[in-house]
Amino acid sequence: NAGVTQTPKFQVLKTGQSMTLQCAQDMNHNSMYWYRQDPGMGLRLIYYSASEGTTDKGEVPNGYNVSRLNKREFSLRLESAAPSQTSVYFCASSDGGAVTNYGYTFGSGTRLTVV
Amino acid sequence: SQKIEQNSEALNIQEGKTATLTCNYTNYSPAYLQWYRQDPGRGPVFLLLIRENEKEKRKERLKVTFDTTLKQSLFHITASQPADSATYLCALQNRDDKIIFGKGTRLHILP
Image 1 (spheres, helix red, strand yellow):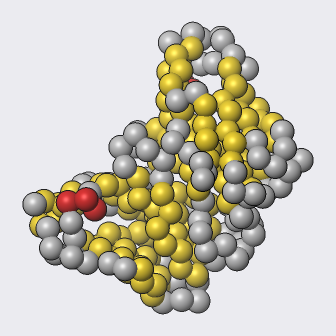
Image 2 (cartoon, helix red, strand yellow; image 1 turned 90 degrees about the vertical axis):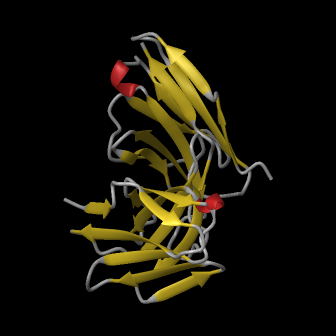
């Protein structure tokens, strides 16, 4: 099983450019998440989707938009990239709800640099 | 505000000994506490989940304790091996499924 697949793995953008980070999971999970990870800051939640058709803001949503395209796919869009958005972005998925014993499954990350 | 604290300094442990990592939290009443492992350049990998009404959980060489009175979890790796070297993340989870992560502790197992 592929688990959670993120594309691209690396990206360099110029300030003001836009791009979409793609994420797909093949585990039939209901919930999907986007995190960013910065040195000294840990993982911070950007947006999440508890189920197909719903999205909600996390801790650091400014400058980002998301789309839950279907149950499998959850994309993150940067409309006008800024150097402060240089980070490693992780997508994750889970069964959702309070009974999971398996935690979150993470993708391998997208390393984004904005110059 | 909610806060999770893990040792920010790296932990060096001799191979074969037990490594113990600490996770403390404030202003939070989690229903679940999770531990993840993260290797350089990789995403976190789920290891163990413990519920608020459980005191201890074991999986192979791993043991997690959860003290809701002290607001603390301890993560133990027994008979540690160099392959256990990684960053370990503590995560707190509410009943609505959202997780907040600690910043992690780097563990080095010395051969």
